[in-house]
Image (cartoon, rainbow over the protein chains, first blue to last red):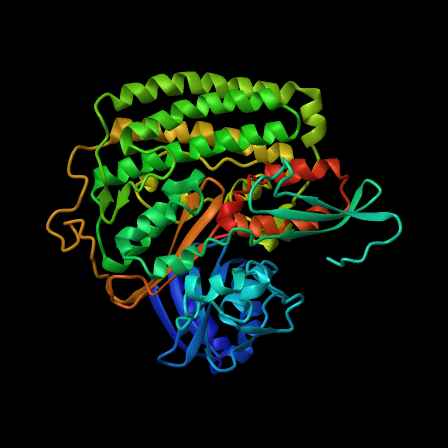
Length: 158
Length: 374
């Protein structure tokens, strides 16, 4: 299975949900998907295109565009193509459906993205903090407008 | 995990002070009698914030930072980071530099497996085994030291090449060390295969099947111990791995014994790869000539773009996702560590096992917790 057939299969199945796609090389594909249909696309990827290996899931903050991109990097155990799937969320109220029902190991990635970016994952089984101490919750430290570590957090420690 | 404890239940905390897993890691296990009913992994003890730090450092400074994600795999972390920049900027690595990188990364895998295996042996009661592997690891560390000048945090790779060439007489040193090491590995294997107590503690314990392991996102030796031949060096070759002859080591049982066996076999393969590299290595530059990046400039601008690059770490799949906005600092770096999904598998894997096996199962994953808590 190569990049071209994957793109044509995906856009054929979801003509409206996938509004942008790009083939970077024979083994790297980028698609942009509407946030409300992430789970269906993931399920199709896993069951029909044998993308069974979620490499990682994370956020990228773009304050200029007032957007947070949630990026899913999905690989496979059967073929070498790695697919990068992007869902663009509004920065004021970032919300996206959780993909834990499809990819089990998304659990921790989503908890991490939740506490570092403030992305709210709907229907996540156990959305609670994973790596941050209690004092830093609600600060979204990986957002670009975060005030910075020593100035803001040292106050909490004193 | 449900924190409520019934009349015949108790919660035991393993780590950060428990000798099983010293480091920024805690496993809360709920026990009923001797059996684990439920468990939960707690992290975030020394959150290093490496992803945030990298956003505020230039690309060259970043190399020293990624070393510190997991110092047992410093060289492969560098390879993943440097590979991202090379892909973004379109830098070609000269062939000699690629061979030197492969040699150093395989040496790094050797020392990591030696430590992981010895540490594991001490978890199940072979404390003297740890002393043997540490002694052998010291020889490998000296080889790395003679090239990079550092023992654990090397900062050895550069965009397009490496910092230094191999020293004179390196091939003879390697030959001498590997002569001893291959005998030592045979001895370890004999010990593991014949010792009744060791077999009782490892055979049939903590079994992962191939389907479950794939579903949980595991990679590296724990996955290969279930029979899945997934190795980035073969599946998506980087550097000169496609010109080298090596096989992907797999076992079929998926238990603790198989994981250790995979590491033993991989050490032999690594030695085989290094010997081939030393025979084949061409002469030539170790740094590309006539490129805008060839001056090892501390302030280097990388074209805007996004790239995902992954390499085979001693523990599995190590990937970096880098977003560049065209400035001299990365806009966002996501580190996909191999241990992160592996640690996630502990709660389902530990359900229903006796408490004595917690250490055997968690230790066999060779989890570097500092990498998870980045």
